[in-house]
Length: 365
Image 1: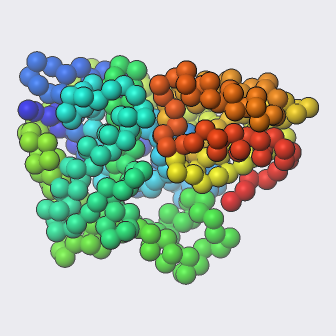
Image 2: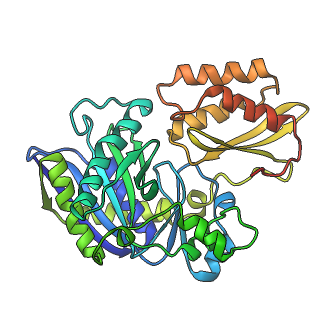
């Protein structure tokens, strides 16, 4: 079995993210058995990449990013905000229908979890070759001795292809990360930086020898070849692909509408923030006469745009009443095969009722 291999270094996040989406939307497995595409890349120092359903103003210190010249963008896969640059190796895999073993169904409850389990194996194998023992941990992290060394994300496109994302920490500037992300610190102190460091680790902290980004790429290539018993074949982007990618970059990834979407609706918005098994759930609401005038659901969860949009649409103009809200949420869950991975619908009902009964409430931490 052969996989196509693409490598990019120091590209703007806008161009790199457009590349992944374009390939996921246009890739058709050919008769040469190039079923998968593996892309390894670094982004230009430094950039912040939001998860698909996150709110930029809630997650990122936008004035500080502007001051430091840190690019902000948004990917099509779910999950949380990450810092990318020359010392964070990005992994993107375009997965055709059937996935690693030919049995993947087009269902986010099944496929997102299965994609993580299947394709984390290549990263775990690569780290093992470097002498670093790691493990995949639900919902979307690879850990070394309980510390995060890589984060995973995924989504399934309408054509049945899936996109797997991973960010592997070769090194990390924790102070920069704390200054541009809205980590809940009133003041960034050395103690608080240490607390962040205690939750993360890097390849160079765990390896006995200094690892360069090029060396890490080589081990990643070998790790995936070993894990999937295949060979990578280097096939550069064609002129036609480059043209399509740049068009998508202009239309989506260079627009404020894409990057800064899901901002708060108005000054009358109330918000509830709750940490759940699915990730952080933020419910922003505008309520008038005990009726939901508008609602936006954001967070670092995994779902599909279609499901979240449908849920928001069906909740608008509904009364703040447990029976009414629960019926809408239950109906949307049962109507669609896609939902919010690992989320109990009752928790979302509780969040909406809390927000609806707390007008002008500030965002809770």
